[in-house]
Every structure is written in structure tokens, then in C-alpha cells.
Image 1 (spheres, chains in turn blue, brown):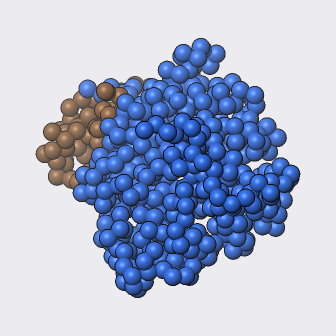
Image 2 (cartoon, chains in turn cyan, orange):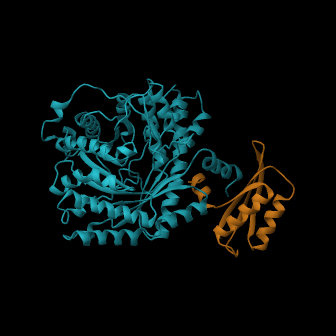
Image 3 (spheres, chains in turn red, orange):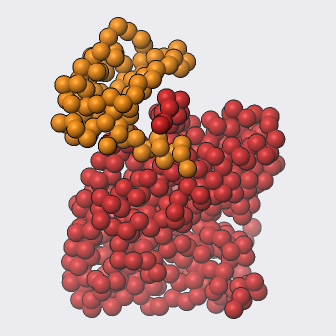
Amino acid sequence: MINIYEVVETNNMIEKENLDVRTITMGISLLDCIDSDLAKVKQKIYDKIYEAAKDLVKVGEEISEEYGIPIVNKRISVTPIALVGGAACKTEADFAELAETLDEVAHKVGVNFIGGYSALVSKGMTKADELLIRSIPQALAKTERVCSSVNLGSTRTGINMDAVRLMGEIVKQTAEYTKEEDSLGCAKLVVFCNAPDDNPFMAGAFHGITEADKIINVGVSGPGVVKTALQKVRGESFEVLCETIKKTAFKVTRVGQLVAKEASRMLGVPFGIVDLSLAPTPAVGDSVADILCEMGLEYAGAPGTTAALALLNDQVKKGGVMASSYVGGLSGAFIPVSEDRGMIEAVTQGALTLEKLEAMTCVCSVGLDMIAIPGDVKAAAISGIIADEMAIGMVNQKTTAVRIIPVIGKGVGETVEFGGLLGYAPIMPVNRFSCDAFISREGRIPAPIHSFKN
Amino acid sequence: MKKTIITVVGKDTVGIIARVCTYLADNRINILDIAQTIVQGYFNMMMVVDTSGGTKEHGDMADDLAKLGEEIGVIIKCQKEEIFDKMHRI
């Protein structure tokens, strides 16, 4: 039988170390909502999402109460809207109307984000894909809870540089459209290489076409739990360090597995995956950067940071994999800047630069995330940053992403406040040398040699 | 059997166990095990109870006990056993 020390340990993790389940995300296929009549598509989308997810928030709260574990977010991901709206939407404004429908139903069922205003264009763009991408700025400006993502490349297909060039402009335009709110629209827009079909985390969640009609995916968290565990092994060998992370990741992921199975049972929707990520929040003691510091770095960004992060990411996966029957999504350590107090501090101290963050993305679970840059950075430079990040993902056969916010009207030395889980960030300088001639080339970067495995 | 773990954390005082046990008896909830210890100067008590014969839903019991805790000046939590079992047992 469970003993009192185990009970106290679990409850300390929850109460003092910010252990929580970060999100229960219901993936819903909208492929059966396709119609050539826009009004009908909107109605079908609304009805299907409402019917599937009307109890999601209530069930999340019930589970939270029964087990005494906070479940921070309840969210929805849907089939990439470029596929769903392609037959009905003839203009950018048509697509933006679908975004408004998603926003409306998200409010109705009470979820705080709905992801899937997306296009998958890793090799080429259809007319619908391009229309959706061009509609992103107005869609994000008109809605509150809709998140958008675009997959621009993969190890199997190479990188669609036409789409990379376009996304540089779209990111800038989204920033302009939402400049009254410190360009907040860009916090809900992410581009990927090797985007997973079952990611429960925003802004990049969408319900991939490989998925079933409905599915429950759960994202766990717990950087504070890992940090506290490491405090007890200061000065010990790497073997002890790694074992401690693994054991902690196992415990954290088991909670995610329990919640996922329970949510699946109560909602009558199959269990998909647990995403065993260390996802920070701006709360004190909920930082991935603090784990790196606990390992022995003065600040995140100091020499040794990439090695420390590589170790952390790998041990989290090794510990978590055995704790869940199905692991997926992004799984690993996230390194967003604005959502992590330790990262913010590292940037403020001058320890962490954009270039070091790029190096870190080679070994973390995702990519350049929630980074505020000056509003006057050119679209081509943003495309260059995106292309670099896509190349890292393509060559290393991993998911990489860029969620970058050019804050209109602000420059280096200023701070931007997004609020809530999105946090706040000092604006970081960007290399000012030009990549215009490179980005203006048309076509795509071919898939790397190691993708030819057939 | 439906096992729930009740934990009480706070400053030690007379009658904590008595008040909690009285509530459980009144609601036909059977106590399977009790353990207590002092962690960092705080009184920690854990009870394993079987709620299968009880008259209250989990949520109501949790609310009642939380309120009782407020009266005594301690924090009382009710959690289903699985969260501890899954975390600490393979």
C-alpha cells in the first residue's frame, strides 16, 4: 500500500513545485465537414466541434478535483483548415470566416485555444493553402482563441522556400494587424519543419490527417519538479544526474498517462498520446532555464548550455517513454523565452542570444519559441531565421519550429508583455546583415541525402 | 473497493483525527489505514479510506473535508488513490 512519504512527495510536487497537467487536447477531424458551400461548412464545423467537445472542460475539471492535480488548459485541435475549407473558400476573407467560426465554438465550449488554422506545404502549396496562409493576419486579428501553424518543410520533402519567403511577410503582417496589442497575433502563429500530427501543445496543435475521427492527447509538464530533484544531487556525477532526471520524468509522465486514460474513458474518445514535455510557464519555479542552472550553469546561454539541454532532453524522453503506453507530440524540453522566467533573466543579463538559442534548438524538442524581436526587422530576415531553423529540423530528422514576434513600434532594450501563460520578454537583437538575395530565390531546397531510405 | 487518500497538513492541535473520523463515520466511509509524521515542522496525516459504501460523491466529500479543515486550521485534501499508485508503482 502507498505510504505517507510517497503521498507527501506527490503532493509537494503539486503544491510547491508546480507539477500540473498542462493540457488535455481533443483532436477532432473536420474532413467530414467539407462542402462547396461556405455557409454549410461553417455550420458543419460548429456542430461537429460542439458535439464532440461540449463536455471537455467539465470532464477536465472533474478529473482535476478527483486526483487533486491541476489541469491548466483544455484545448481543441482540428484538421488543417486549408484542407477543410479548400472547396468552399475562394478568397482570403472566406478563410477568415472559418477562423471566426472556430473562435465562436471555442468560446461556446469554454476551451482557451483551438489549433488547426493550418496548412501543410512542406513541398508545394495548393491554391487553398496559399489563400489560407495569406488570410492568417486577418484571421488572427479578428479572433481571440484561434492558433495557426504552417508546416514548411520535412526531412522527406525538403524545404518549401517559396512558403518560407511568404511566411516572413505573413509574420510581419500579423504583427502589424495586432500592433495595438504588442503584436500578440504572432504569439499564436508558428511555422514547423517535420510537424507532428498529434501535438497537444499550442500554438502548433493540429489534428493530422493520419489521425482517427476524435482523439485525446495530453501534455504534461513539471520543470519545477525536475529542478527540485536535482537540488538534492548537487555535485554528483553525470550518471547520478541523468538517473535523477529519468526517474522524475517517469513520475511526471505517469500522471499524464493517468489523466489521459481517465479523460478518454469519461469522454468516450480514444486515447492518443502523452506528450512528455517539460513546458515552462512564467511562474516562479516553473522554468527549464533554472534546471540548466541547477546543473551548473550561471545562466542559460553560458558555454555548456547546449550539452546540458541535450542531456536534459534525452533523459526526459528515456524516463517518460516507459511511463506511458503511447508517447508522441513534441516530447522533450521546451525553451520558449517569454514563458520562462530563467530564460528572460538570461536574455536580460546578456547571457542568451538568438544565435545561442538556435544552437539549443538542435537538441531541444522544438525550436525558436516566443522570441520578441524589433518591429523594424525586415520580412526577408525573418524568412532567413525561419529557413535556418527549418534546415536544422530537416537535416537532424527532428521537429523544429519558429514562433517569433516582431513587436511593431518597439526596439532592443524594451520589454513586451503578452500576459498570462504567454509571459513577457525583452526584445532581442537580430543580426542586421542581409539575406535578401538568398531568400528571393524561388523553389525549394531538396530533401537531404539521408532521407532516401527506401 | 474505491480507495481515496485523505491528507491533513498543518499545525498540530487537539482533536484533528477525532473530527475527521467523526465526519467519515457519519458518512459511512471506512478507514483502512492511518499514518502520521512531522515534515518540516508540520503535522502530516494520511488516511486510506474505502468510499464504496459511502453516501457522498467524491466532490462533495472533498468540499466538506476542505471546509472542516478550515474550521480546525489545517489543510485537508481528498484524492483518489490512483494518482499515488501510478506515480510510485510500476
